[in-house]
Length: 133
Ligand code: HEC
Image (cartoon, rainbow, N blue to C red; front, side, top):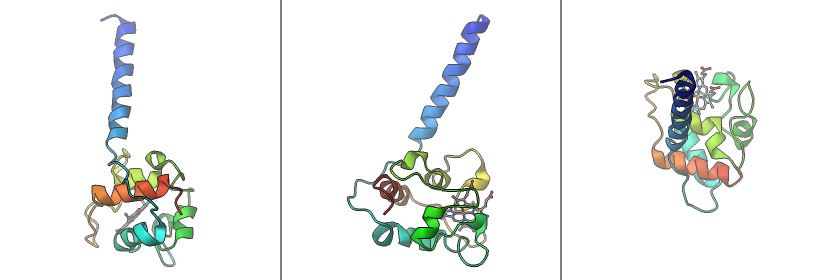
């Protein structure tokens, strides 16, 4: 293979990897009128609040109020309202970030909290896509 064909092949490889990474996210739920209080709060309470609340929440992220979730971590917002596929919180729970330290809840955490189900992730996606209200 000549060098330019090789570069093209490498580029194609990177590109298809990016597509696979996106396709890996469970689909957004088709439920209408998804809200924090009615739908996602229960998920956050069961799977996130243990580490993300109180005086010293991990990553300084408060997951026990809508305000806290919208504020995000010490590094900034964890969601883009209207764009769940590009929201850190979705990538973290769907294990769609390369750094395993960002997979949430952390694998094999001492609290025994299990990964979210595709249905739960789909609800979080729908909530963000519908404006994170
Ligand atoms: C057992 C404790 C624990 C639980 C449960 C937990 N987290 Fe975390 N979370 C952490 C720790 C520790 C960090 C900091 C990780 C780091 O800085 O590498 C973190 C960081 C994060 C971050 C920032 C990641 C980044 O790359 O900046 C997000 C977003 C997050 N958590 C969301 C969640 C969500 C959503 C849930 C529930 C589905 C959850 N976490 C459950 C411990 C936890």
